[in-house]
Length: 220
Image (cartoon, rainbow, N blue to C red):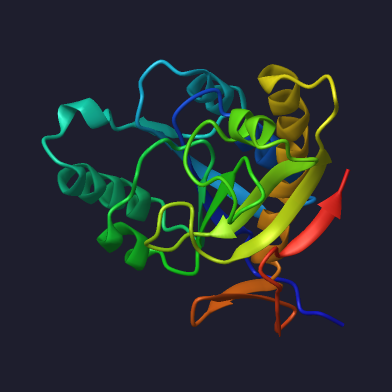
């Protein structure tokens, strides 16, 4: 019989906007689908909807306005200080629109995950839905990956593959992809707190077996 974890995993979520992925993870924690608690939410923008969502879940939140810092390094230093106050086992980037410094990434290496709206390694960066449409792709989707020092790099954990429909536009495709974001991000967090996924020597492992470049793929 598996010994129960003494305490739920401590999760900190970083946001910049609406916080819909944060809510999906928070709801999964609330339902005990994830053996973890979101102990803090940090936003680099004041007044965003994600902070309201945190208040609804009675989760402590912190605002660190990036415009008040003279450098990326100074901002990340403050961010590290605030994250460490929560003592997290996992740091989740949920629509956190900041490029992080190498020092930050190294500090949380192996316990820092991100979600990106494309089938990485395709379409790193912004405007992923429009780029997929312009390329005539038949499939698009979303990826959860461990964070490395490369932008939208790091080994993939899980992808949701979404068909591109003939009448899709950027808005309709984005909506359908986002629906799957809310499915796979809680799955990835669940796997992490259960010790099923890990990053070793730059590669992602699932149940101690190396994952393919795509990670686990789910098709919708």
